[in-house]
Image (cartoon, rainbow, N blue to C red):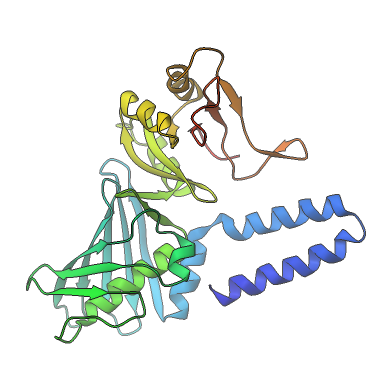
Length: 288
């Protein structure tokens, strides 16, 4: 885990323990708010992680109309890699341009089953195959910092592409789950809201916070909720419509709270009248 991040959390813990002896209730509130501030902006964390590897984030964009995330990273000698992540699958396409302006193109296939997020990335458990799209050479990596099984020397572009992807996941900007890509809701929702061609419903995934996936139809959204997963909709009424189709009765509208007040960074959501199946959330709107 990023050492600066760990140090910050340790400092907060010590502070909280001190104040707990004075006022336990206030201590819990203060620590919760400060931790949320640290976790609030994943892009800043990503920039810090990159800087430690002598890399610089030059572009971070979410194209809502194409449902594509575009990230460009530059190293200290001028090599550049652009990662293109479609919300419709979990393959990553990378374009590498050296400082000498030679180009290489790769497809990075994630082999892990289930969610690949900050926890698994920190532990170095990401399994992937990187294919050179020009030569057809395939490089098999058992972990981010492991060695490649291919006998040929590993091109510089693969190292830079894989390192950028590693840091992207470590910062929690993006997660991969069930063959789909999801982006931090705080980055995706403003773009979706301002997109004139936006859909009414999107897949969502919760790993500590809400991540937004590809757009979907009402039927697909209801099916996802019925499987115990989550969605995000552009309005409360749109989200309520989904859960109304899941069970008879009055849908349940709520948001997680602390001391009676909505938690910053959390989303209002609807549940079916029965709250079943367990785990489903029909999120909507912006975070608190």
